[in-house]
Image 1 (cartoon, one colour):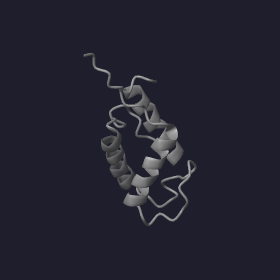
Image 2: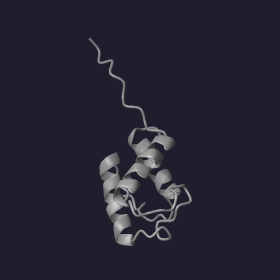
Image 3: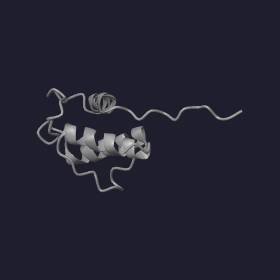
Length: 95
């Protein structure tokens, strides 16, 4: 019998955003600024070392490599959402 299992669907940009928001809220509960695509990590009180720790968590969560792709240079949450969505889609063969 042929394998009829469907490949996993690539997450939408909105689902990537929601998962990133949850990671950030868990990792940085002290951040009081509303999380929007315009949220600047540096202006939100997140130190650069903390951002790198977040990058590692994001890479593990989504099974992607931001650092290896040279895509770990972002300033806003929206930029991070876009990068993660791009890499997840590329990994799924849809980018």
